[in-house]
Image 1 (cartoon, protein in one colour):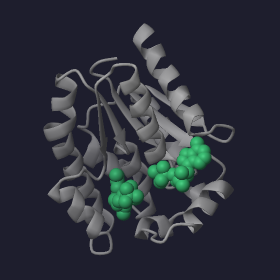
Image 2 (tube, rainbow, N blue to C red):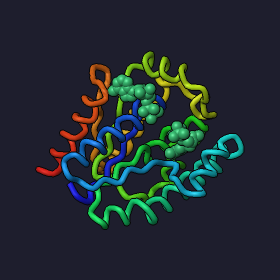
Image 3 (cartoon, rainbow, N blue to C red):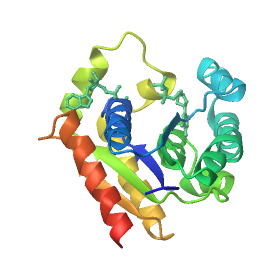
Image 4 (cartoon, rainbow, N blue to C red):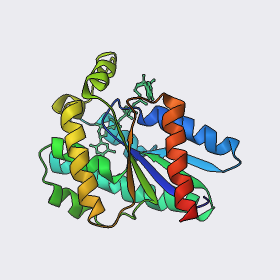
Length: 200
Ligand SMILES: Nc1ncnc2c1ncn2[C@@H]1O[C@H](COP(=O)(O)OP(=O)(O)O)[C@@H](O)[C@H]1O
Ligand SMILES: Cc1cn([C@H]2C[C@H](O)[C@@H](COP(=O)(O)OP(=O)(O)O)O2)c(=O)[nH]c1=O
């Protein structure tokens, strides 16, 4: 599995960060070297984006996020892959294909800004019931501007569009239905998909 690049995607609150953490533990227990990362990235530009979400909107936000993504690829993702690590990113280009649409940008324009990103080895979309996700979001203290602009059901519908859009471009993608699965179950399902890739 060395040099495998995985993205974990899905609506806010679906369980991306929790799943990525557990999956990385499972992989490390199996002796793999794993690099966990996130978008926006943990760099000055990524942090600026996180703290500027009211100042950066629409096209400006889309371009800032795309710039951060290209820098993330050059400075962090590609070097880790070249070192033979498994890279797991909590959010990737699919997040732009969803969140920037919540900010009123058309899919075609968002893709123009992101057309040069390398495809993942595998992109996993987590899905859960909108009701459960909403209950989780209701427990959070802070809600981002784009979180407030959308809803779990709307984000889920936009993720369906992103899946179709990238499938047409040959991306390797899977859906994981989290409704009947605890965190270990979701991580184990992801691991199965990764192992299938290896045996292909
Ligand atoms: N498979 C799961 N089963 C039950 N609860 C989960 C599961 N995955 C995540 N959670 C819970 O859902 C909440 C949101 O998870 P989080 O990983 O922060 O979501 P995201 O990164 O997609 O916004 C957290 O309280 C987390 O503990
Ligand atoms: C990755 C990504 C993030 N964002 C925005 C959404 C949020 O306002 C901000 C932070 O992302 P988010 O994942 O919601 O932050 P956190 O990890 O703190 O929950 O970046 C985009 O607009 N497009 C993207 O592609």
